[in-house]
Length: 119
Length: 113
Image 1 (tube, rainbow over the protein chains, first blue to last red):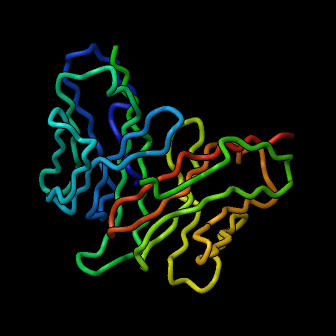
Image 2: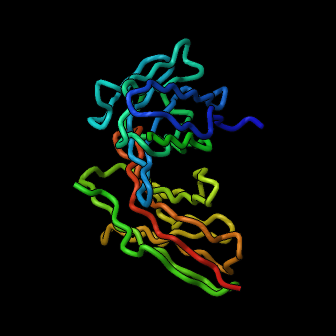
Image 3: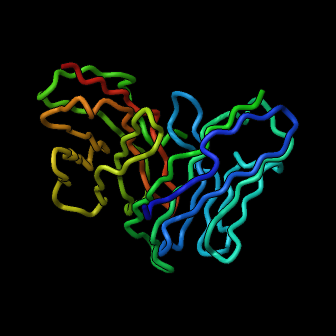
């Protein structure tokens, strides 16, 4: 299977603990995105990378959140000192974006998500 | 400000019938893309169909078609010949700023046998 993969699929943690999620994008995709989806809502954009550079961070991404994409391959999303409000599905997506240009067709392929429950 | 509006929280459709899911959007940018995704209970977002703002023709992909009315800023999804496997959450999304997707709240579709 050459789709986007995420690990773990489910994570239950206690409030105050740190958690880290991993995303492996489609190998030839240079863009990688993180979204958060709460129950009954659509996904909300958190951050995105073009290769290894993190180019945009949403205001939703508080100081407790950090994302990395070393070497422009897989990415990790870490949440420090988790709170109950962090409980959500964390979705990763990747796409083959152009390096320049005003707008491009940018179909994003999503992974299965990591469902986080903070007790 | 909300950019994508999906006003139908849930819909029921009989198997083999067509169903239309509404989506309106708000943008002042002349260049944008509109997407529909399906999210079954397993959670994965599955791409269905895309419409670019400059596309002259309405997009079609198999049983999915997009009714794009640019002046009204609407991009409704039509699913023809509904199947039981179509039961899922459906999200309309807009791609602007060349990278991020803004999603609506979604519409739950339940197909009845």
